[in-house]
Every structure is written in structure tokens, then in C-alpha cells.
Image (cartoon, rainbow, N blue to C red; front, side, top):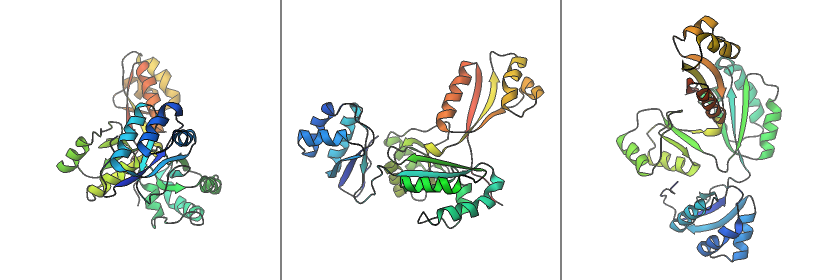
Length: 301
């Protein structure tokens, strides 16, 4: 992932995951950051760890690329940006759209004593694709929110580490030619599961795109917070009866409709991205052609 141009001339480097072999990476870190070999080894051996502050941007990008070849994952952070290591992203996701009005009051009561900068329209935030998302929470705050909402029906609470988070960037409108060219120039790729213009990108890249194209209607969606539905499109190996026997326990669709398979049949709902990919592979191995759809936002009255 190329580091993207910003006005700042220096960045920080944060180690995101445990280094496979600090002794191999340490000489490169020491050379690029002006550290002793012992200091570089110590920083690569700790987690979370900041490898360097105020590093010239081109040097930082060169080191990030080199470390990536060695299997060492680092994040470039802007000056003044809160370090993500040890902090959490959190999403509150309604299971049913008609539960949102009641959930809004419960969620607001749980979050207000614990979180600053809440959206004024909590119901609208809950209804958004991926649910109400919060960033930069401590582990203690996440635990307190989970505890406060543990008895709340029709609400899914999902937490993920900020460090190493990846996003798919969707668009509310067709991308302009300058945006499409810029995304292509950066080597970013789309995702056919989500319909994203750019997929699997980091937080800094999301900020860059949003800053450079503020009117493009870009919507970054955290991969840990995505939810998918899976539909069956076609069966190549099973007989209609075998297919009905297999799917009847998994779906409310009548057996007769399954056997006819005249239209896509919903077979799974609300899957995480990792589960969705695993299920698609399993179905393909059984000779079933399936399609994953990213769950949309909920309409509000």
C-alpha cells in the first residue's frame, strides 16, 4: 500500500503486529531511523511499539515497504494523530430495522456517560450501513459499553482493534473521472462483494481520499463491521430433492420453492466478512453457485 501525499513532511511508524524475527529486521530499522542495533531490536520486540517519530516521509515509506517484504506490518501515522495501538473501534448494529427507534434511547443512555462526540441523530447512525461506529476507545470503555448493553435485544456489539484496521470505500454516487483515475494511480482495487471503489485500505488512505475528494460521497466501511447475506443462485451437482433436504433447515423458504429454484434463495443472513468468504468457499465445493450481498442501511420512517 503506497503511503499517500500529505502536507506534513514527517510521520511516525507504529508496529502493528509481532515481528516474526527482530534480528532480521533490526539492521534495516537501525539504518533508516538512526538507531543503535540494540534499540531497533528492542522496539521490534515490543508490542505495541512506536518505531520512530518525526521520520521523513519518503524514508518512512521506503522502510515500510522493506519491512513488508520481511513480513513486518507497520502503520504510518501523521504528526499529532492519536496512536491507534491499544485502542479499539466499536460498532453497534441493529438486527432489525423496526427496533431502531427503541434502541436509540437505550444506546444513547449507555454511551453518553462514556463517549464524547456522539452523533446528534443516534437513530440515524444506528440505521447507517455498518451501524453506529465509534473509534479510539480504550479497552475499559469497550468493556463498560458491552456490559451496559448486554441485555439489549436486537443489538449486535462488535469491537475490533484500531491497529491494522482495513476499510472498503463505497460511494453514494458514481465516481468522477478524476477520482477513478486517482484510485487507479494509487493501485487500489475494487471489491465485488461490497461494490467498493477501493478495498482493503488503511485509515490513512481513507483520510487522504476523503480530503482530496470531499464532495465525492465516499463512505469508508470497516471490514470488521461489514455484514453480508448469501443467496443461492444455482445448483450444479445436487438434485432438487437433495438441495431441498440440505437447505430446508437453513431457510424459511418452502421446499417446493427450493426444488424449483426459480429465483435466488436467501440461505444465510448477517454474516461477518470472514464467515461470508468461508461460506462461499464451502458452497462452491458442494457445487452451489451463491452470491453475497452487503447488507444495506436500514430505512427510517
